[in-house]
Length: 436
Image 1 (cartoon, one colour):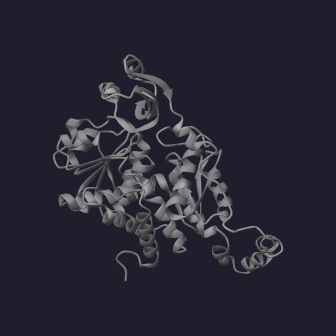
Image 2: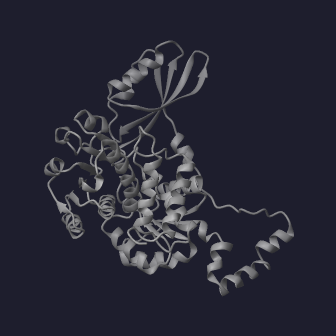
Image 3: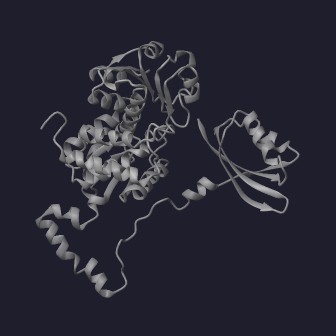
């Protein structure tokens, strides 16, 4: 798979020197993701060049840079590691603690009054503790990104990243919980036992099919919001992008034939939400027979990959297999979303060149747009769980906020997340769709 490589390259501070380095990179078929001048020493400049490269293939790039008369490779930057050093999150007090009276109020003996009040009325915990501002981010490390079963501790940087986004965009405290357990029943028991510590539960990077069983059981046992982000967060942002794309090409999404390539947690989550939204025909393909049966039990139908590409007006791929979708399979006017990161099943520009009406990848359609506002809205409205109406509200909001030249809005815009939270909270208070 492709991973970020950050090279430190020193070049002469003369016209064309940097251009020759970039030309070598381009000749190797690589794209510069970021370029930054680190420092300049007299007649030389040190550049930090971020590329996405195959983990074990260097394309002869290093040797080619070294062969340039005007540049040399100094090594690799530790920028990414430096940003993770010491972790990305921490717990800290919201209140000052400078006087003895403040100590007595927030700890003993004053805290006893609050404890007794919550004992008599547990609902007060939402007002006088951080419960309504907290989300447990729980993983067992069995499906971390596109890396697979690398274990819960190796998945900690992802969980910290989620927590950082919660804090940055919606002011929630996301707390990573790493569980060394794979048995679904035991996981449900453990999470249920931990649940009183948090206002909501976000399941993260738990492999299919266990993730379906775990989420369903937790929803039945807990009276608080539970969401498996790989399923539902991804599905919400995908639905939002499809709403936008369908609107731009004048197509009715619910009347379209939608093909889902890959029926893991994300694929099944997308298929389920689209069916709930009203899409009548969902066609799926996967190498796993159990996954295909799951789709059929939901009312979808199976097809071989080439046939799916021929039948469907909309194609969504979540397989983690780079280049899986052949360019010649793309139909004129299709909407093609290849969502695997970092390697898409087909590059958007390739699909567009073959006649796709819209094409996008996982860099643009990212669940970071969904989960912060979903949880903020649910907690804001004191929801006891997530409903499809809440998910639809988030998707509609994201589609409505998308600029004319984009399918979804900017994921770094705090106002977008606030708007999603408000839309989700409003959906909690509204009757189900179709009812007065």
